[in-house]
Length: 451
Image (cartoon, rainbow, N blue to C red; front, side):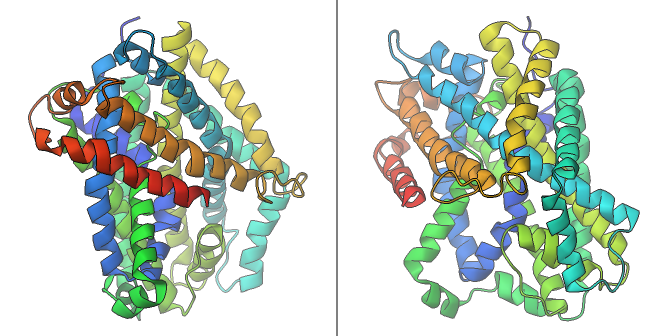
């Protein structure tokens, strides 16, 4: 079966950025920036994004582009005879499944809230308890959560079943362009609210006192983690898009563009959230409570709040669903490459697997709420821990070692692939940094994640 390629460079960039841009950009990045010195944290974040995120991203893309295969086949095509690097490819496939076991449920929450705002379930002047009760009632209702999870999964696989160009690329282009417009509209509106300046100051102005209270070491550590995890590297989620891209442009240049889009959405999310929070005297919280309790509480007290709430959750739906369909494409490609399935067959089989695998997360908030798996964590948090603390950082280290060590693909071959085409190129002088410094930095992240 002939392998498809992206129809356009824009398609590759938007799909890859769509995979990187997710709910973490919106509910984690702004809060972490605000708590860790504002502008100073952003500077550290950008530094680590350039020195760590972009290099490792190019490695996943290089394995994909050089092999023209998904994660398992990519390793097998490039590894030395008799070596076993391809075993990690199967862990990457597992990581994509585990990620979707909880991400489809959370994406379903976004869609559910989007519909709730359209229907008018959130009315002007609702009490804080009533707004919070909507989220609590949703979590307590397994059939409601299962319905939106199923809608998300089936819609995702139906889109992907139409092919790379006619399915994933076409729909993601529309969603990502709409997402960029929505985020600009929402940010401009937030900046016009009374008292918005205080929120912007808290968010982005450098604050030495905050850095001192948090501890410079902790601020640097938080920036390093955010820069690393924002791109979802280590499970082959990005590798697959390298296998579809052309040789016309260098990988450092394309990786930089993906990072710019990812960072733009993350920073703009804070310009939506913090001015609104400070304008209404609400403390910005981290995580689900920010998205599903704090912000809806602001919208119901805001002029035109139903419209702004609808637009915000449409933005959140696009942000989460773009990641869902990008990861589904990875699972489908693995089925086609490793088992010779047609795209339709791979879509159907993976749809059934993901639907079944997503059920524990749905039940983890109600019927199985007393089930604690890893360190007292519930189902969703345990699944998230496996992906975020184990599979992503360890997987990134494996990709790195494969690309820079003589026992793997080798630095010279990786560099030649990364620099193929026009655009920004890596210098061969970076070899000692890639071989010795970068592995240590990622090892530090692994240790921090575990302990």
